Image (cartoon, rainbow, N blue to C red):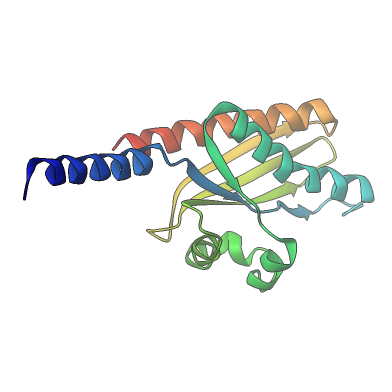
Length: 170
């Protein structure tokens, strides 16, 4: 092999490695499920609040790191989620959905509301390749107005970013 061919081979190989190293981490954020066990459950306002959480989380994640947020079609999520809480409980099935979407990570979440005064975000970060939950996050929301929801989502995004960054370093 002459030196020009060898240099070209090294150049191509370096470009491939650089592209792989610079590839953004792909995260799929599923819609939050509402688990409202109050005496007046599933009000329109609470359903709207819960529906806003996945887009808020996607935006927060994309603002704090170079993540590629993988879009998840609601019908596709519904088809994979045999019943309420199915993907939340069966991480391997959620990981399979993540693999179909081309994601590295998939986030499954529930918004649990045991009281009118507070609620919780219960969230699993699932490694798609390993088909297992790597981390669980529990965020308490005291109150139900927009500011409280945004603060909780921002806190969640920082925790997810810290976990993913730590694991990407390994």
